Length: 274
Ligand code: NAD
Image (cartoon, rainbow, N blue to C red; front, side, top):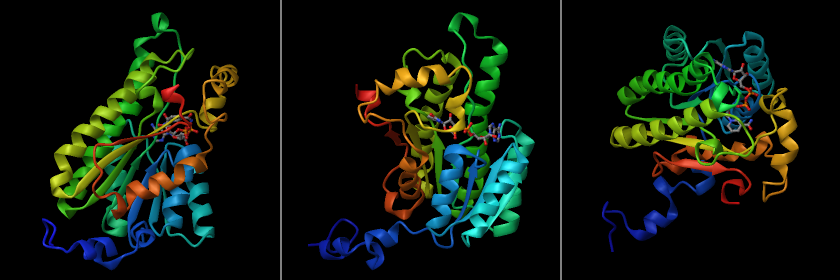
């Protein structure tokens, strides 16, 4: 019997174009970028995409960090490029997209990962803190999605993966992160909306929501004291390491996930279900 696409079930079972499942996870000849690639989760994403075969542009507001990670990739034999950009500035976002296209001719994988975390009690949250958080986490992610989306829609192909957070779903107690939590909930809705709007034209948009990941971000003065308390809220019994997220970014960047769009992939050791 034929499936609705005129392909036999046996052919489907052998895999897309005869490719085995692990081959469908390969990213050879793909061009990727990672914002906030200079450290933490973004750095781990950049290594994972490069190891899977992609060329990777490392984008960070911190020039030295971006260059260091680009060099780490080169030492592994991965083609890489360091770009300095503040994703809350529209001119920086357009410049980073243009630079990648002019160097490598296309962008297939966009990891909009850069984000910031401010902590204050809700009654004390200033408009300045609110605006700073939203300008990077939500407005910046939107600008990156739109600028790279225009390139991908023309190509008829693209994978956008935004970094949201478990805080988009639950309110981790006793964190004081009104602006962070609401900005990340916005990232999920942005992902769902673009993911359904663009999929027919070949562009999939998904997001990853990590739980508490052991990166420099959580070792800030305000968050450090909470880390011990959170540990008791994580069924898996430990914080996430950046390596816990690496296979997920490769999957969402690859053709193996072509039927997924608008999805929020939660990786939090069970914490949001507790
Ligand atoms: P991090 O602070 O360790 O690294 C963030 C990187 O982004 C830094 O290199 C920083 O220079 C860069 N950056 C910050 N603002 C930028 C801007 N405006 N333009 C370009 N680059 C910028 O953070 P992380 O823990 O690796 O977090 C990465 C992402 O994951 C963020 O969006 C964060 O909200 C999200 N996240 C983190 C955790 C966690 O527990 N660490 C949990 C859930 C979600």
